[in-house]
Amino acid sequence: MDTRDDWRALHRDAVVADTHNDLLMAVVARPVPRWGSYFRERWLPQLRAGGVDLQVLPVFIGDEYRPEGALRQTLRMIEAAHRLAGENQDSVALCRDGAEVDAALAAGRIALVLALESAPGVSDNIELLETMHRLGVRVASLAHLGRAALADGSAEDGTRSRLTRAGVEAVGEMERMGMTFDVSHLGAAGVEHVLEISTRPVLATHSSARALRDHHRNLTDDQIAGISRLGGVVCVNFFAPYLHETDHTLDRLVDHLEHVAAVAGVDHVGLGPDFIQEVFADTTPPCCELDAYGPITYLPGLEGPSGLPLVTEALIRRGWPAEDIVKVLGANVVRLFRNELGRAVDTSRR
Image (cartoon, rainbow, N blue to C red; front, top):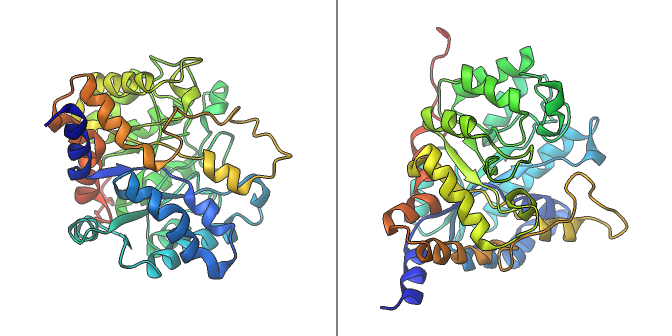
């Protein structure tokens, strides 16, 4: 068997987990009767082509819905996830705990896990986190790029703000319910605060290494090491400007994967592609520029889920052992979800 066959077979046989794809934004932009069929026609083939076995579905609320419409749009996106899962039961399953993830994988279905990205629909009404949990949400973050009721996003690092009192309460509630905390987008001081108070593993769903690219959206080595100590996973973002200022190549992505593995250990690295290019093209009028992100630039061939096998090929080319590649492709995230997802604990003695 030559190298080309090796990487294809390895990717095909591995469990592949993508911890951040904003495809729900595109689904909910379609007419309601089209939610399930649009996902089946537009996104399911891409996920299958990329070998995706587990997909985290973030609920991201655009500025046009904030603040008054944030909760309504949050509920619409959660409903869209339930409907697309219900209409495609032969291919996907919405999972609320590790057992359901394992059952979906065993049946050859893609395990879908609902996440809140910055949770503007909750704001400082922490009791709504339990509502979201009842609706199937199992991962959540507290901030995006700007200021929020629970914490500051990474674009506000100059404030050096830790979590608010409500933010600290939110972490405790999430730990109690078995909702995994996502540190991606959180400001630097907020990340450090979370690592101080967390008693359960946390996840960085789409963050790269600041040591290689000094960007506020990336994590420092101390933060990466802290996530590892808690038993969490750092899932590297594929967005080209977060990997290198100008050299937007697959090798730069592998550099970040290798750096995170060196700092955190290979058991704490995953993939958080953040495939937003197609989503924004599908939902944003051509009149508008997305100043917060700059140009929407991805690595050649990795503009969407179908390119994920290229990561496996690149890791083999770098000399990674197959067992380590399998961990990074998805085994690490599946382990975290198997052990933590939806597992309630008593935090009354904290």
